[in-house]
Image 1 (spheres, rainbow, N blue to C red):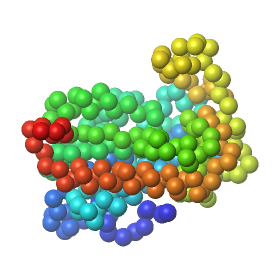
Image 2 (tube, rainbow, N blue to C red):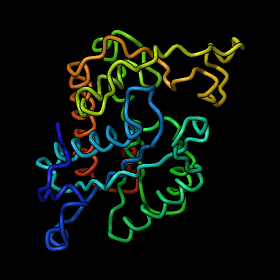
Image 3 (tube, rainbow, N blue to C red):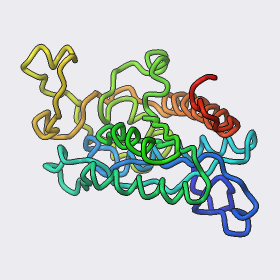
Length: 263
């Protein structure tokens, strides 16, 4: 499932060229965002980067024959990781810094005539809601946020047998499907995390930030036991199919006064 083959793809900004770009009218740009951080002991630090890159690229590849007007940008490798800095080599960008980077990318895209942008996010710590609200008030662009791992949640229990919050069965299955050679055997923690002491937090109607170092010593929340490549492939296929269908619909829908609402 290697999506980094060295060939010219007109849906891939990194591999296409000025000759081809000059002959295209791109309608939709996809910006993959991610993070570099610990994922239990057995998964690579680049887990979020790898899976966000894959979903963004595969979705654009699938959408391309149906619209020939989507472009996938290279993934941003760093994200908001202040609550994982107790684990060695976590790389943290403040949300403000990340927002500035994404905003300036969007400004560049608008300068090239693209009004429809999808942020394909691969890290739960990145929060782009306020940025999207503000930038759509400041510019004539339409920005859509997709946290890719949520796309198939309605089918989650049909594919996986254990819940996954961070580096558990789902993410391990994704890694087994995409980059099994980067999984370290025999070192994974069980992903058991200390619960909140307050009932309101446990029930979910009150929120706070979690310091992952207080949860356990291996930065995993969710048991990876039972993970398989087959589970990963099944979920990735579901997600990429849904995302690609949205990209095609978005690319083929003109921007009018009511967009993205119905007339």
